[in-house]
Amino acid sequence: MNPFDSLGLRHDGRRLWVLDQTQLPDAEVWLDGSAPIAMVALIRRLAVRGAPLIGVAAAASLATFAEAGVSATEYAAACSALRGARPTAVNLMWAMDRMKGASDPVREAQAIFEEDVRLCEGMATHGAALIQDGEGILTHCNTGGLATAGIGTALGVIRRAFEQGKRIQVYADETRPLLQGGRLTAWELRKLGIPSTLITDSMAALLLRDGKVQRVLVGSDRVAANGDFANKVGTYGLAVQAKHHGVPFHPVAPFSTVDLACPDGAAIPIEERDPAEVRGYGSLRWAPEGMPAWNPSFDVTPVDLVTSLVLDRGVFSTADLNSGVLIRACGTGMK
Ligand code: MRU
Image (cartoon, rainbow, N blue to C red):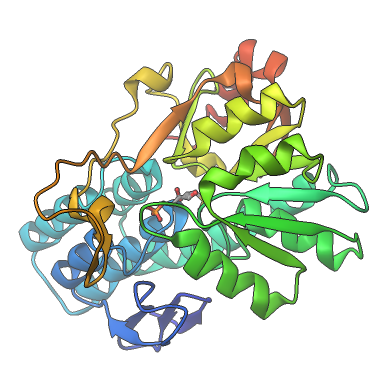
C-alpha cells in the first residue's frame, strides 16, 4: 500500500500501525495491526475504536494481508472475522462488504481511507455553519481524529468552528464506563488548544439547566433509515436532557454510518461488553468482586429527540428525516 498517516492509524508502505487508544493519554504506543487476526483483537479491546476508524483500519489490514499473497479462501475468512469484530458500528460491515467484492483490495482500502478524510471535511463544513460565536457545546465519547481517518465527526465540526475563529467552550463528558471522553477527547481538545472542560456524565443536566450549553453534538455508530441512531451509551440520556432544556441536539455522521437496512432504531444490534468494565477500570476495581453489572456499550436515540442530523452531504431536520430523506440522500452507494 502507499504510505498514509492519520492521528490513530498509519501505514509505512509495508506494515499497518495503530495508536493504542487504551494507553492514551499517558503513553503513545503504536501496535502492528497488519495481520487481520491481530486487528480483530485490537478492535475488540478498543485499542482501535470509533465507528469510521474501525472500518478504515479493518480494510487496511485486509489489504495488507492480500498484498502478502494469500489465497481467496484465506482472504474471505479474514474479511468475515473482521466484519464480526464488533456488532454496532455499521461502518465496519460497510467497509468489509466493499473489500469483499473488490477486484483490487489495496486500491479499495486506500479509497476507503481517503473517502473517510473527505467525509469528515463535509461534516465539518455543514456542521460548523450551525455553530454561533460564543456557544457552549457539550459532546460525548470520542468523535475526533482518533475515531476517523480525518478530523472527526462531531469533534471535527467543533474543531472547524474553532478554526473559523468562533469563541466556543466545549464540555466533554468523561463517558462511562470506558472513559473515551476523559482520556481521548480531552487529549485531542488539549492538543488542538480548544477551550474545554471535562465533566462526569451525571453533571450534564446541571450544565444544561444553568444555561452553559447552547448545543449538543455527538457522533453515531449506526443511523437507521428513519433517523433513530445508536451511539455511545449515555447519548440517549443527553438527548432527553437537551430536549427538556430546549437545547439543540445534533448527531454528526458520514453516510457510511447510515444503514438503510435498519428501518428504525429497534433493528440496530447493541454490543454488550464485559460487566467488569462497569465494576472498575484497568487494574482498579471499586465495586465488590462479582457484583452483577450491566454493560450495554451503546444506546438508541429516537429521531424525535434530534434537532437535525449533520451528514457529510448536508444538514437534515427531524421533518426531513421523518419524510425519508435518508433513503433519497444515501440510497446510492450504500450496502
Ligand atoms: O466504543 P467506541 O469508543 O468505539 O464508541 C465510539 C462512539 O460511540 C462514537 O461516538 C462513534 O463511533 C461515532 S463518532 C466517530
